[in-house]
Length: 412
Image (cartoon, rainbow, N blue to C red; front, side, top):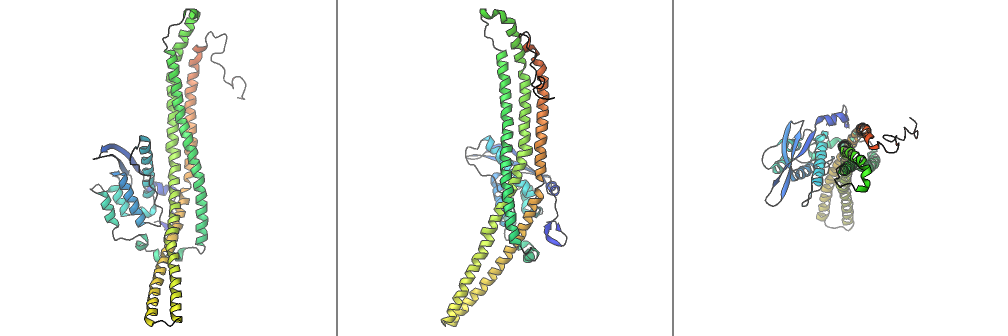
């Protein structure tokens, strides 16, 4: 991991550094029929490794499990849930996107760049990828065992690390809550654009159906026969423009899904992995450390009690031996706790390196709105003159009716 010279705790990456390291595509390939159930396969392509491999969902599951074993003190993103039966196209596409976010967050994490496990997952084309990944970490030990900095981690931590950890955790919890709400609203806006496309297309089809109506005109309406025929012909031709409007609205909705919602989901996945890491720290190494200290305290009381009651020397010696073992265990646990905090400090820095992604998301949102409204406005303006024939001979009404701005309702 690239760190500031003289201080291995501080990272020196930028957001372009992370995104420029690798981009991994995850695409669906045609379903294959298993013995009992169909299963979905993905083509996973890495620009860094210049590789393309095929992976199933269960391969991702094993990969994530191995990462957590090897890097328990790093942000390992969660996977989307597995759905055994009734997986429709919408679910499959949602899971594909989630898997793509997962593997890109992993591939762009500096701690994983040179890891053999990541290399295997993104490049190995042989048989039984899951067994290959398990073999790669067998007997290796986790990052605490393999990292040269683990024994000295405490020396680089600030004295108020616990206070900083609590403050960072609260800040990132607040950021997560806000981005969660932003993502929900962005999803609704994208969905509304797609719904608008459906309504515009339906609107045009109804106009076309009206223009194509072949119901005979009753004799009492014969005086308006010419007007109705002209009106039908004009209405029939408008479906093309409304189909184009629908296409523009759908494009805007898809653009917002890809450039806005997906980027928000990517950042949310990262923030969630940080929250999960904090929980692992508290429930894992910190909890074990506190439990070991409690056990040590009880053993000290036992040896004091044995000494006071003048018990046999062998019993006291056994207690002293156990206490010595417990002290070694506590020392090892303290080193792990400090290394966990060391990693947490770096992972917090990574979150802040990702924060400028906010400007990219907002820029994509604004651009999608500008582009979408500009293109639809152009189609509406092209449609307006084609309405002229609808108002011919309609008792002097303007052709077509003036807009509110033209009528003076709004300042120009």
